[in-house]
Image (cartoon, rainbow, N blue to C red; front, side, top):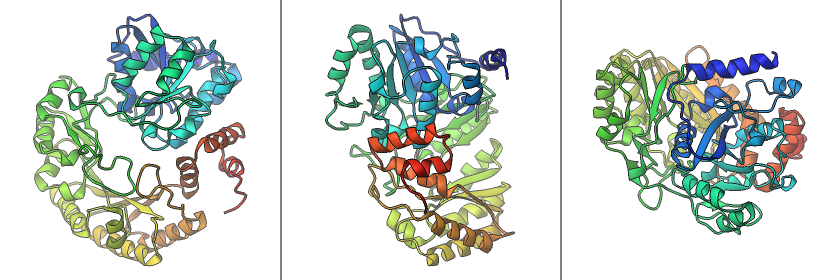
Length: 481
């Protein structure tokens, strides 16, 4: 790949997009996704903050992404540059990152380094951009960002990003950081005495929705919109669990429908508990009756009924995806997960009766207190479901997150998890499709999710040494499992 090919790739992507904004303000900012373009353009949070930054009367924001092939940028000595203006990140006074989860930290480091911006904040001066971070990671463990960023927006950023942009335009960096180190909703590494309160926007600021559509996103040409935010459930492992002020903030179906562009071919309803919305059937029905395909991010089995599933089938659904998150009833009760075997049996029967092709079920292993008896129960039940409708299991190791009741729970040994996965594969072979995620990379995620600044520095060492699993083990000083 030549340097010219890199620019042509970016220009081809921009040409394919609809909805690109151009702010009119004098403050230029770059908004970065530490994952590749196809992932970033399927992120509702990233797109929402992009719109908010461009709506600010004094600012103009451009997008940048982790290159698909960072080694090509390094070999050609190309800095990461923005899609709108093809401007290197180092030329912006503000560079912001929207970070979804722990493993994206390596992407942040890669982008900074490729852009000739010192990775460590201690190595930067006022001549360098102000490095800001926000996104879903800040709900759990923003501490791992502390060695690298100048300021973190904690929680929901739609309001606070405007406050921050105002301050950047009006205040010097030192005064700005000192002020925000004491402000709720912000964390300034090295100055804030603690991680202060998480920001939450009022319901009248909702919903979040897509700004740019492209067929080159993971969810190609899908308009994403959020009919609810938060969750009324209290699952012990989830950072989206019930909040003190009531959890879910609902958006009326009519407001959601009014924001969907007329010619959008696909609509995705996004949220932690979309099927808990009291108007979800009405909303889905009107989307589908308008000739659009539909996707819903979170189908809870206990909330499903045949009418909703038939609407989804008309909207293009072929696989019903839901979650059980615990291989036995005993474990699900401990986790606060209200989904039962009967809920899943009924879901499988509706898959068959509505003409869907498959039931896909998310499961966790390595839950605290789990035994092989729990695994055996899950195998038995999976076989039962598989006799009703074709079944796929997507299995992920449990990773304890900060700010949940299971914060601090240990990670099960990798070899133990792999033995359990082998038993599951053997017990379901030829009858249920089993798709496990890596126990080793789940361990890396765990080490970051439970760590502080030291874990962030370990991530930097792993990244410097190639980012392979052996590098992560060495960085965390774990020679063997």
